[in-house]
Image 1: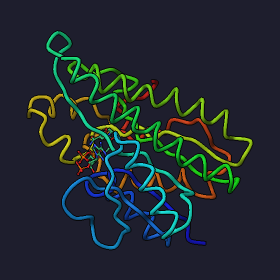
Image 2: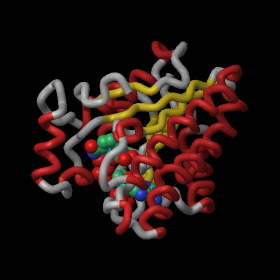
Image 3: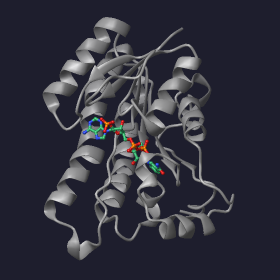
Image 4: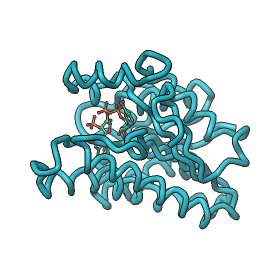
Length: 234
Ligand code: NDP
């Protein structure tokens, strides 16, 4: 049966690949976008996840069109990279507000409907740097490891109602987010990846689709690395 799926930040990059993977599996997929036009073939809901009212309105729209969200992929995220002593409070706050608080906001709203349905899948898109740390990404790494504690707490609260809560932790994936990194940084990452290449968005999408599937019904509170091996052992 087609499920009502929401992918935040599903208008480009990893999010769009995830949305496409669910659509290919026959689900009804909504994506958030902030400006411009939503991608074709999806229910586009204009929504900045840092704004509580916009999140509320987006969920109402999706419920009216597709039914309550049964599968939430909290994917929207930003970076504001700089070294610790140059990192302003604004750099810190904006990354935490989007990556961590924004994910909390959408997950809380989604859980409300899932508790009524007594089933659901919540997947947070974290990052390998949430576990490894990353010079120049104090704010980003903190937000991404924060998702893990949050997901595991939700897994304990929601598990008895048939709701699983998991984390997918990608490594280096070629998108707009990583295209801006200096060539030297990209070379350094590449030298540390056992599989010897960067990831493709479709490889993240397939793992997300699987962890949200019926087949993965006995997995909750897990952190699934999709990182070419760069984060092994963490
Ligand atoms: P992109 O920069 O390509 O896309 C980010 C997406 O998030 C966009 O759709 C953007 O929307 C959306 N977004 C950002 N802020 C908000 C907001 N306040 N409200 C709603 N949507 C928002 O990033 P990627 O596709 O590379 O990354 C997707 C996720 O994967 C992120 O959480 C990222 O941290 C994570 N990740 C990425 C890795 C990589 O190597 N690329 C590695 C590990 C994790 P808009 O178009 O409107 O700006």
